[in-house]
Image 1 (cartoon, rainbow, N blue to C red):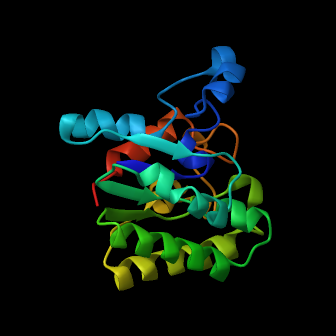
Image 2 (spheres, rainbow, N blue to C red):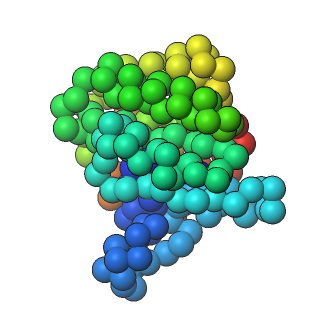
Length: 191
């Protein structure tokens, strides 16, 4: 399973697939700070994850790494979009990049899945509308391209404060906490 995405895929703020970043994290390093860790525990030997998350990347930048990440994989899960929103890129542009990755993955013979965009506490409320717009587009892409979409947004959203992650599911307001990543790992399904 090639997990392609941004810092959410990488496991920020306490994990990163890049050894240099892990070395800088020092004592804060925690491999449980990634949804792949928890999904792997649940799925067992059925699949092995390759974490291809890169902090700060927009969907167009993620797309540029797709072939290298997916090489030799049977499955591809695509996650991204929050950095597009944070950098003021239109949701429609991010959706085009995501659709392109889905199409390329399917053409390569991979079973493809998508992840929608998480709530963003530090961007709330101004980012709520673009996140909702991009999530609607991601779910439409899933239906149109016949690939499953994992609803990570709703899994972490605080039912008492729409547009934000529950306090137990985030430590920094940008990324899931270990408890948040664990929650995401429990809902993860193979495409």
